[in-house]
Image (cartoon, rainbow, N blue to C red):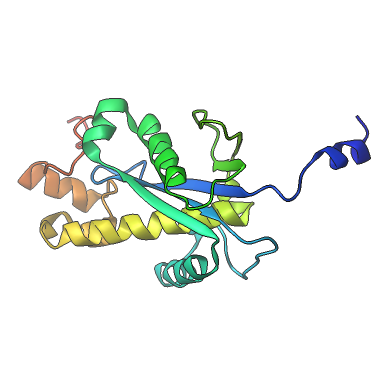
Amino acid sequence: MAQQDLLEKINFDLIECGTDEAGRGCLAGPVTAAAVILPPGFNYAGLTDSKTLSRKRRNHLREVIEDAALSYHVAHVYQEKIDEINILNASILAMHKAIDGLSIRPEHIAVDGNRFHDYPDIPATTIIKGDGKYLHIAAASILAKTYRDEYMELLDTDYPQYKWLKNQGYPTKEHRAAIREYGATDHHRKTFRLLPKQ
């Protein structure tokens, strides 16, 4: 098919959401996903993959995204469900839940990564490193990361010994040292290797 013919078949006015998750590699807490629909032509300097941004910059961009988005939603899937269905399925479930919560129904879903389960009646495209390529996926990555960090900060007030305010539940040396000393909490993912094999 000629390029011009292909272009004529593409509807550039599709309502499309970007979706991404945060927290897959953590030992504790939920996996969190966001879905975002940005207005046509939206652009903002520095909006990119949340992993490349400082905490201060992420929090600033969260406000920009929430003000500008036509619709957005954030969803947590907690450690009990992660242990039940595994982290990949839980991550995809979180993305589905985020899409479920949008006030506008998208006509297409752009997914960060290479794995996704079909969403009812809406086509989806997976994009490896999509959070560094497409603004709506980058926006979703920022919301997922900032909302999950906020959740872990709240947990930290009850479990300060695990330093979740600093490590957000990731497998740092100090986090694992605390697990070794104090044991696992109800917020830890029991199917994960919480401590390295001796």
